[in-house]
Amino acid sequence: MIDFYGVSKRFPGGQVALDDVSFHVDAGEFVFLTGPSGAGKTTFLRLIYREDTPSEGSIVVHGRSVATLPASKVPYLRRSIGVVFQSFRLIDRQTVFENVAYLPRILGTPVAEQRRMALEALGKVGLGHRMSAFPKQLSGGEQQRVAIARALVNQPDLLLADEPTGNLDPELSLEVLRMFRRVRGRGMTVVLATHDRFMIERFGGRVLSLDRGRLVEDRVVEGLEPGEPETEAEHSAAATVREANPTVREDDRGNGAPAPESPEAGPVEANVP
Amino acid sequence: MTLSRALGYFWREAARNLARSWRASLVAVLTIGTSLAVAGAFLLLTGNLARAAAGWRSELTATVFLRDDATPEQQERVLELARAPAWARAAEMVSADTAAERFGATFSSLADVVAATTDNPFLASVEVTLDPDALEGGALAGWAARLESEPGVEFVDSDQQWLERLVEVVAFARLVGLVVGLGLVVAATFTIAFVIRLTAYLHLEEIAVMRLVGATEFYIRGPFYVEGLLQGLLGGLLALSALFSLHALALSRAADSAWLSLALGSFLPWREQVLLLLLGGFAGLFGAVASLRRESLRPAGSD
Image (tube, rainbow over all chains, first blue to last red):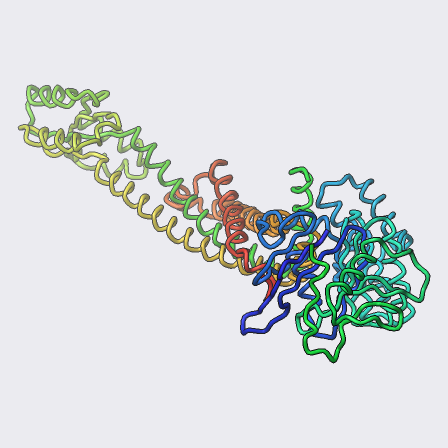
């Protein structure tokens, strides 16, 4: 589903956002992307949906080379990817329905079908009754759920979320995370960027850790909250990481992580095909 | 998405944008309306004068005035020479007495003055009706010179000189109108471009969201293009309405002035009305397209 091959991103002025990052994500995986602020998480996601292009390396999403995709084809790539932002990014002057049905609308879907699709997506996030409300009439949690519904409305294969719980209180954050786990159950690949380690430990899954633009960890964490079983890909990812990188140690729950004290602990590339 | 649905969406969004930023839109519409009204006023005045000149050309006449002492043979020869060119449709002899009668009939208030004179002050003449072809290649001037050299001819008077002067004046006025009008339309286009760009900047975040969910550039820019088009068309309609009202008002007050009545004659023909409207629409569309270069709709820092 997603392949990064030696991807680096440098901004004008020399600031390095990503440094030689390689990895592979299978279809249907649930991946946490974590790291401190400024680690490169947002850039990582922006590269996937071609909001930005890498300085080096190549990125393949859905079998398409994203970096070399002609500008005219980018909208079609994005239609197959749902994106959720920390700041929701809803269109204030449009109703909940119009926000959620935006993509079907620009695809020329008949209005009745748009309505059905929006209602279904809003139903998944429990907001089917707020179709005619405007974003500013909703709470932060509700707005985020609308943003998730918008990302889900076209049933994309890939869902990207950039700090989706950053503006929410802990209770709402849990609710939103549970929502992501549910949609993943339909075979959707989910990449969720967060710096909230509590969430990761609570829900578990494959975790990619970035630090100053480098991929320093690729492991599987078992969650405390019962969810779906790990996919085969998650198992194999963690196993491969442990085999390939001798500096990765087993943590208390048996997951691999690079030894922080080791100066050689470099980027984890074991999962790269 | 089908084109008809996309166009429907563009129109709805454009109308919504116009209503939301109505003050800026009003400025744009007024600017283009004023520019087109000025261009239209020139078109109206010069059009009427040109039509009048064309009418006069089709009724072109020349008068060969004969000397008092011209013999019948000389008169006959002048009549013959006057009829000679192919573009001389007809020629007739008018005696001095007939000329005096005509004057008395046309200017009845002066009839007594003419009757009081012992000698007839009018000259006998040959009146020639000409085709407009006579004005081509100096034919009329050559013909008049030839006749003036004939014995028995006092002088030749034709409409040529003033008609040519009128045609020159009309052509110059048209040129001035065209330059001034186009200059103003260009200025108005810049105003529309500015307003469209302002509207686009107000929607920059929204546009970024549209891009993220997979909207194409055509879909994102379409409403702005239609907004520019609408502003231009509304400006054209405003110009036509203002011109129509002003024309009607001026015509009602110009009855005493023959020249003004002539210049105001009739309102713009429908083709020119459509032309003004289309010019407005084109200026608006062009302004919108020019203002929305690829980079202009991207937030700072994006690729």
